[in-house]
Image (cartoon, rainbow, N blue to C red; front, side):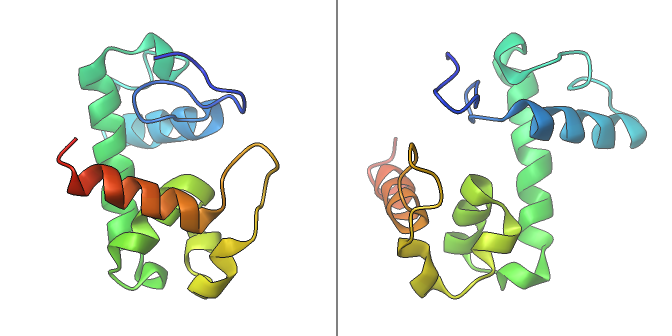
Length: 116
């Protein structure tokens, strides 16, 4: 579990600003497990799981994502604004060091279908 080139780290590839935001939100709700760690890479797997589950529940409840698992995956990768766009726009590369949103979504779906 090491940081990749764009600063995402840990089991779920959290960027630090997202990790810290989730930690602050969970702490405000009475659970300080995530906020005890400044980044995902420093947190045990169980704490990373808590943060992942918390954020995924938010994405799954986001009405702009239309209860669509592909959009949840896209939102994890690029954020809800990109995920809510027409899927035909997902073939545009948003950062030079990352795959397109479509390639990312397809790779996650493929990974899931293999039971990994």
